[in-house]
Image (cartoon, rainbow over the protein chains, first blue to last red):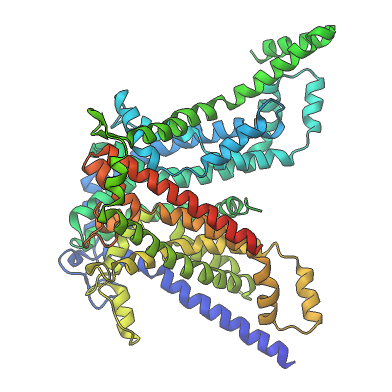
Length: 280
Length: 310
């Protein structure tokens, strides 16, 4: 009996600890929104911190929207991300399928090459890629952000694993009917790939939306800045002055992603977990 | 169109001449290579070529237009440059503490979430939330959160009677500001990965332990932790790969030179500074190769160490 009681108290304790740390983790977001509504925070941050500003107004937000650069950067980010995701997912579907169901010379070697690409960081490629896109006069366009997303080793790997689980018997049936490999892929396997495609869209969306270093190198034209680039340039220009505006800007750039996340949380968390059990 | 294609491949089958069997096989093989064309075009153009070009550049003095072969001089410049070793030190310092704090803490939270009687999914969603915001926006918020006079962290520390810090205003504490931000941002990822793997541990082991009279803490210590070896190894390796490439948040917090006083300039920031504010492509390329080798060696060591544990 007392054992059960201890378990119960332990349960409440766990809940309490999680709640306290959860609040601590969320505090920066709550504070961000609160300061965003505080016009006077542009001169001096409200201190001691308070949840509701003394003189709440949408002033900071209206400046952020009137300025227009955030909206422009949102449009830029959206365009780059959507095209990159389409490119990344379709090329990974094709390659992942071939590595799973294909029979051809050098399959193992080529797959090892794909896995090796996971080990190569961006930094050593930065300058040659910059020079490459410079030589074809594509700096300050979206091409350098979109084109390299055609290769994503992680997505190919996940995709291969997914197709590995699908039985070969469907293939053989279609083959007896005389269907070619492309037809088998597009009409038989691609329609079954919904779950893994969703995962791939989520993972490549997160990667592309948050990409920073490479866009920073190739986009010097402010009009083409993506959201992270605009945030960084604003932050570096103003330092820790203009607190109200900075926080309004941060809110507008973070909140839509959070809302999207809350709607899709089950799928997003599943996708992240899937990308993490690859080692097993 | 698909139908024509179908005919071409289907035809040889009907006649079944012994000699053309090989030919047919080759045709099918070629189709498979077509599937791989987009990816391998990308690998050649955006991975293989840059790696070799970067290697070549590291032996040249270059600003992008004029090039001059200078042998190993770039490597010598980098390896004897104090700011480079400073950036290596900063990168490892921030990485070690980020990983040493975040993985155990994340695992503890994951274990708590896994066994909490109420709000499992709620906590999962909340704890992962920092990770979905871009690190750039997070750094922008943390510049204020960690402000020595007006920030909420110092306010909270003072309120509970703990010592406060100058955080980003002082070179001696600025690395800890980055560590705090990195832990806050990364911990959700650790929790999700741990939770997924916690749920994969077979419940029978716990049943057996319960029958033997093991308390839940003992079960955690002797069943859960030993079964998470592979997960910790994965987190350690991905954590280090990420930590050694750290750039975004230190750029937002301290600019390309990692102010104050280069105290948070990472290897990535050093390369960016030399390559794209100074346009010293040769020196930056040499630095990227040194960094690349550091990452490679370190990953191999990590793989070896974690395999031994498994």
